[in-house]
Structure formats: structure tokens, C-alpha cells
Length: 77
Image (cartoon, rainbow, N blue to C red; front, side, top):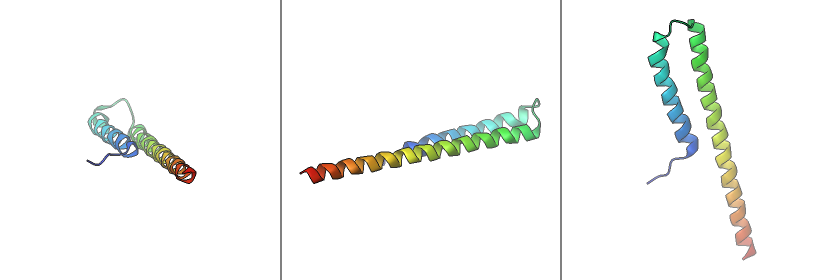
């Protein structure tokens, strides 16, 4: 079974959650203007994109570190 990366699963789950909440609550919220609603949804998506980018970079750094450690172990033999 293929293991899914955290950089894919977490942002995808948050994207789905934010989208469902926007679809459900935005038409029912009369206290906010349409501009405020769109800004809120856009900000949510930007935060999710930043989370995806940070997690992706973190995974790349961990993979690079592991590769360097493996190379050091192979060179010491």
C-alpha cells in the first residue's frame, strides 16, 4: 500500500473542509458583506497553500538529510 505524504494529506483535508464550510455557511451569513466573505475564503486557501509549501520543503529537507546520512554510512564502510 502506498504511503501518502503529510504534505498532500493535510492540505487536501483542510482544502476540502474549507470548501465545504464556505459552501454551507457563506450563503447563510448575512452579517458579512460579499467582499468580506470572498476575502475570508481566499485567505483560507492562501494559508492552506502556504501549509502545503512548508510541509513539502520540510519533507524535502528530511529526505536530503537522510540521503546524506546514508552516504556517510556507506563511505565509512
